[in-house]
Structure formats: C-alpha cells, structure tokens
Image (tube, rainbow over all chains, first blue to last red; front, side, top):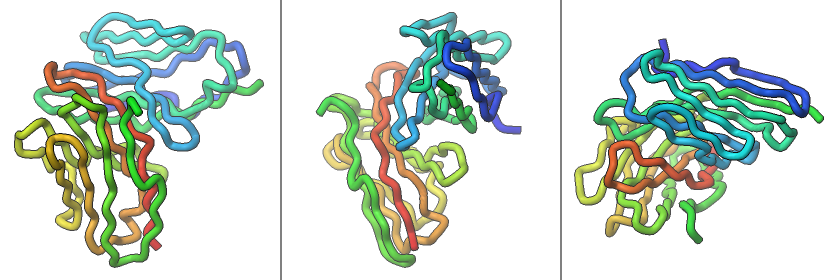
Length: 109
Length: 115
C-alpha cells in the first residue's frame, strides 16, 4: 500500500463545477503539500498545511490530522485549472516529500 | 530571477554517456532537493542537501547517480553511463532551513531523454 493515496486518479468536470480531490496518508506527518503540475511539467506549490484549512482565491485545502486525510477543493472551476494535482507529505524527521500519484483534472468549457 | 532555476531544460543523450544537470536554488534557501518523475510515474525523492550537513542520498537509485552542492548554493546532479530507464524529468526544489515543514519551491525541471 502506498503511503500517500489520492482519488480520483482522473477527473473531468464542466466549467463552473465544484471540484474535490482527496488525499489519504498512512504515516504521521509534519506537513502536507498540494502541488499543481502544468502540462509543460512545471510544478507550483499551492498550499502547505499542517492543520485546519487554507484558502487562496478559488482554491481551498483542508486537513484532518486525526483521520489522516486532506482535501483540495476548487470552486467555480475553469478550463485553466486543468492540470495534475499532487498531494505530498513530509513525514517524521525526513525532509523529503513523499508524493501521491496525482489526479489529472480536465475542466471542459 | 526569484525562483528556482534549472538547466538545461531539455537534454537528449546517448546511452552510456554521462550527463550533468544543474539547479540554482532561491537565494537564501539552504535546503535543496532533487526529485525524479519518470514517464507515467509519480515523483520520487533522490537526494537532499541541508547547509553543510552530509547529504541524504537515500533516494539515489544506483551508484551511477551522484550530486554535489558547491558553496551551499548551486547543485549539480550527475548521471554516469546513462541508461534508457534514466529518462525522466528531474526536478529540483529548495526551501528555508529553519523549520521542519518549510514549503518547497520547485524549479521547472530538466527533461532527460536517453536514446
């Protein structure tokens, strides 16, 4: 079993829809990243959180430490949100990230 | 620029040749990471540098892979005697050192193709 599991693997939505991507992890963590990878390959860090909830524009990330679960929400989705969204955790004394396999999001106009 | 930069952006090489990939972290970031993303695979950790400490090399897949970080800034990842399975996007990231869960900032990556 992977330490970091994401769902769904692929998601297609219509423009304007509310989107949720889920991430579950099996280890104790000190922080969790949500990353966005554009079709050209560049990676952007969307959020880093260790508790509660963060919001940036139309993006919201939540984490439940007890349940070892995080969600990334996109409100009023737009075709430019189409990308791969990756959950990554920083666990224990390690400094490197352990990555989920990513969710390919396609938002249709 | 203000972000992490990597060079070259693309590298095509023949099997058996050595390659060097370069990463310039954000100024002041003493933590530097190398990751690899093979086609159709997730990201995997390769190596981590923190200041003057010995690097964490636990993710390097073989002894053909090595990395250096000179002067606590620029890093070079070297792959010797490249194999086709080394084809991947190699990503560098940097972060501030002081807290255990500092956000990592990623470079644009180097796409390596081994023919």
